[in-house]
Length: 277
Image (cartoon, rainbow, N blue to C red; front, top):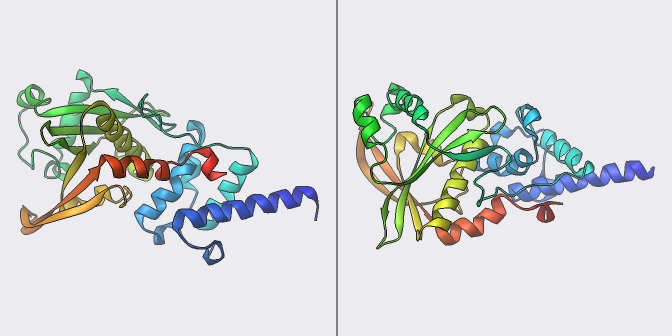
């Protein structure tokens, strides 16, 4: 075997071990033919986090081609061969290699209003189906809000999501987090929305005396938290039959994110290059 072949085999073995660590299994238990669609959303998000962080905006469609564990192993081997690095999202600058946070502009309100007025979205956001007039919406948009950002796609420049921290109680040190998707195509690469959520939460924890953030999620909208690691975002309560949706009662789930679990999990969820090479 040549030196070049030895090095290539080493890259494959390293990539195989990296994927195994992401999934929490032994390297010899991996089946390269396993489809990502058979994994949980958390496992897929954890697997694609380092890949998306290392992908240039001009080649993000490469992530769409990753259908199996074998595809992921091969891609990681290519990255390692090219001395790729993984960049931790910059919580100070509010940006990653996929998105950046920016303030809400007056021109954004029309797009946001059109989303909350959409019947498919209206009962899932804060107005719970009682969509206000345009004037009332604009006048009360900032009520009870601690901070809100638009997560903007770096490659296309479009708005991905509205990320809101609201209901801040300075005596208890708690607030609530809400997210409104603004671009349905972002579902193809949910890491953009996850990055927006992570950066917004980091902003709240580092700029305000917030010790814990809560998410109140209707049962019919539970999927919005499936991309967040359960060791960071923990289910803490469930109110039976709290909502009435599409002709039947639905539960309300309460998730909590503490400052400690967020920052301890952040380094694991977005590991730096030294931990991954």
